[in-house]
Length: 61
Image (spheres, rainbow, N blue to C red):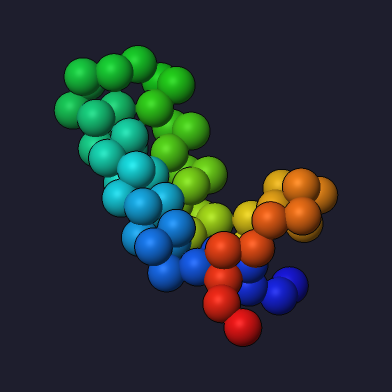
């Protein structure tokens, strides 16, 4: 797995993931908030499996 998620993209993914999970745990939003695990994981591993299919790479050289 080659990194394809850049720094800004990574930070935003992690923030959105944590926010969705936190809102779910506090009961503000329903169970669908657990989808926040996906952006959290892709940000943590710096790899998005959808990016190569779309030809996107936000990571620098």
